[in-house]
Image (cartoon, rainbow, N blue to C red):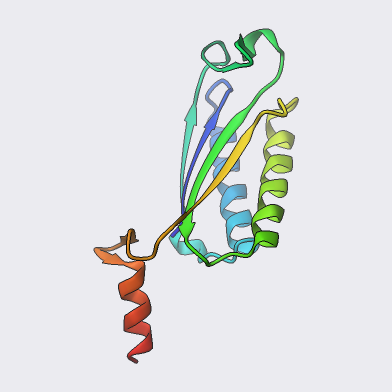
Length: 133
């Protein structure tokens, strides 16, 4: 875990996709202390003419934006870690996309450990298994 889904208001680019995925993986591993080998990133593109902020399309604002939705196990990060992550992701994406609209969102969802998992096992089950060893 975790799972990240980022939507970018930009023209699709293999280079940007690979760079965004790599940088998000690095930040998630270093700032949120998640296992790199379990970080999953999906990158989607939304044309600027189909993304609206304040009722106006981004295509007329000459700015880019993004929305990052990340899911982590509840209680595994402090408020300070989450705040640092939000700030660093915003700065990193801004560097990659150029002029960034301030209304670019990063949402960290904390999911209960019994409500998600991978490889057919919940995070709670993994925790219990680790305690019994």
